[in-house]
Image 1: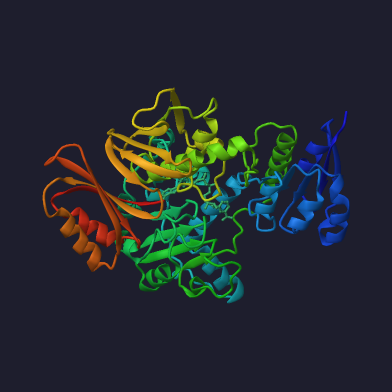
Image 2: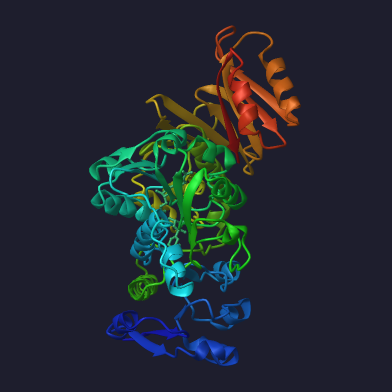
Length: 533
Ligand code: NAD
């Protein structure tokens, strides 16, 4: 039997190496210092089917080009800055990583940081050990028992923090618009629908979301003002989710009693403003630093690389190698359309839908799976912080409990080929969105909730639902003008004069939450949503 040749160029934990060694179809070269000799790697790489690295091996275009047999590159860890992903994709080389190996490490670090902040343990330690003072009165803390912990982002780490906090007799509430309510309920955690409610009710707040467009600066001065006086804040997730300057000021003013932070907006750092704040416990991004998590990462990456070599499904693909076939070229504009439909739907109504129906009308080929996957890619990219691609999208959807029902109908209506998606919105109301491709090239959205449109899915837009009476657009226009938002285009769809209308306003600039609030106050406006495509 011809064996897969696997090269490891950096140190990875023993269990991962053992796992690979005992595979009958693998021949392993483990040379943990090889990353220091790039030329040697270039010399030997042509023989290998797989390469496993950490962050020290520069997986450049040159290396990938020479690796004529390479099928997969495994990164034992999360960040892939050392790997030229585009170059790998172009050559059909899959890149996989191991994002889940450190869940427990980060969870336990959060618990440690929570207690350290509540009792200011590092300050007491410094006072006694370094300053040789016996200051019992100075270190008066708060207890966790009986307090409400607010968890923002109830994923792998957030939910595990919740379980542990309950063992400390805390009441746990969570805000995460993208999970099933039952997931929280099963753990005895109350899922709240609005972030504001969590901010108002919690004594301690911890963030465990990815860093996305939506979560960057999720907690600023404005949100902190809504919190209880003396709240404790934690960020063990990603720097920038809590605005650093605003947290600094709230610690200085005493509005926030204490904070604990493991991650910073720029890393490494030794001069971040938070380092000068009072009552803050800081660590240099060590959430994942445990021996156990290194073992987990090694085993996960070994399994991912094996799966890729054997042609089995991989769970943590970072890139999506593409094939440049004629069939793929025909399908491409519909893939782009499906992706935009996903992106549109998640921002407007479907973010909590666990079942989405996709109707494929007309001849869209025998196998519509690639289109569904493209839809999921668009749908998920606003929710997760890892790059979503055509390989990992179905896995991520499964993990989030999102299922898609595909309905194929050979005949088209109005358009020869059409993709329509339907989901149930937050209040159980149905939302639908349909699109087609014009001239085999240009994706168009042609229908929003049965109202007809002719919309290029690109740029920023406001979707409004209003009573069809004169003057609405004027009022809306003047609010946008007041906030210096330039209107680039406008389309109205209605089923019947004088009833309800739907409008799409194309804008050049982001519409601020204040402007959106004012628009919502126009009596004839029933609903307004901002969509970025
Ligand atoms: P996860 O994907 O399992 O969970 C993230 C959760 O956040 C998901 O349930 C998602 O639905 C939710 N979410 C997304 N957008 C949201 C929003 N706008 N509002 C509320 N919830 C939202 O990820 P995880 O493995 O639990 O990791 C959580 C965070 O911890 C990530 O930022 C990760 O990078 C970070 N992390 C840090 C360390 C460290 O060393 N400090 C280690 C591991 C992970």
